[in-house]
Image (cartoon, rainbow, N blue to C red):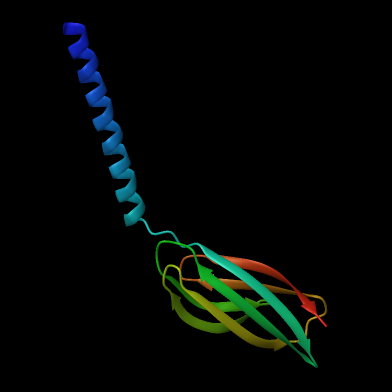
Length: 120
């Protein structure tokens, strides 16, 4: 009977340990917000200019604050805050590009570089 009691005690201790670990992992994940943006971009040539359209979706667990977009190293203001699950579209008219635009979406926490093909 003593061996059975030890086995039951061990199972209870292991179950409590696993439950505590899962609870702490969930608590840590909620407290440390993750910024995760999904970004898609397209560019269309319009005479002597290029129209750059950027679609942004926040797939993270915290709000993302977009500060500006750099296009070929030139900053363009884009002040907005995206809540988790939120989406936004940024449209910029920039200097004409040959075939590619180098764009970077800059947030308060990260930079997201893009290489966008310019369509005629």
